[in-house]
Length: 435
Ligand SMILES: [Zn+2]
Image (cartoon, rainbow, N blue to C red; front, top):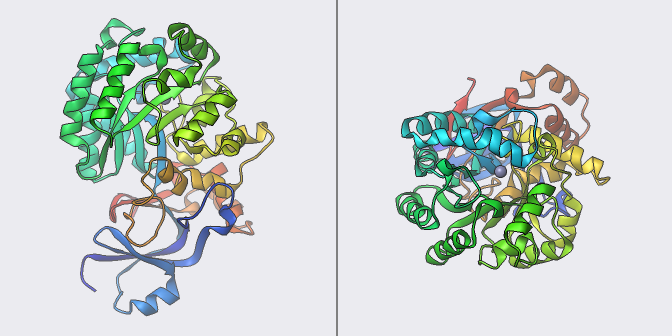
């Protein structure tokens, strides 16, 4: 075997390409003694160690993670790179929280040096928690998105990002005219979109801080660059829903504020979606747009309890986002922990396969990236996380009593965090490693 081959032995878990939220028990793959073989940063083969090793007899340099679990890299489908400093700031709900903590914090990203340094910290937090792909909101400053793209490019990560647009109802220091945000986005697209593994998302923050002109300009950008993503917030908090309706009185409902400007399609990521009506959910399903559940954020800001069952009922694709800084953990495991509890309060608890699907293949499907990431099919980009339960003695103790892979996954979600992330690989290259 030549040098471009790499091989890893461990307890390998993923979902096959046909998996969906309703039938995961038929579509997961678990190799308690597995082998993952890479060629040039992509998956060449994945399967049982003995069987695969016999097919690739020259494979003598195998990295041994046999006491660890190997998962596809985690996907965080909604996170703010400019809010790490606002995490764990107490005492208010969404609209006051934005005014008190988020807007003053985002102002600091008008300094390019500050933007770069704090974004480097942010991306390291993603990686050390096992997150290898994220859909990221910057601030209104192009430097914030530039920093996300530049650092992601250095690390060769698959990332989605955009400069946030706000042309009304925000402090003067964060207001940008629609024309200016449009022009700055065009520059970012030219510089980064489609380069290496990077994608641009037009990012109107939410209906409250977008005027009709702002939404029309976002629509024009999508028309000019149909391959870009659209990311925003919707129906997160009751006061926000009321305010959005007041500011856009001619819209039928919250979704329609975006929909009438052509901003709801199968590349649209709608954050939160707690207070959506049946009519709005039907329309989201029709368009192929996705809703991103942000559990730790929704609990922290007291926003409400997401209804995954209704989303499933309507056939809406969903993923999970940390929503840092309203979210309280970069760990997608901890976000799943809270997603489980929310579903439990709703009376329809998610099962462990559904939980892991959100942050692997399901997340990749929401981002339309499931042809590239999300599982270990041959040809997939080799982003993966190595979980070592022995780094957390309580989890290790609990897993010793587990009687199935579902039980192992569940206890890992409830008890796990960044301590158990032993290594993280991006395109087959180790970026985080305790050894
Ligand atoms: Zn958010």
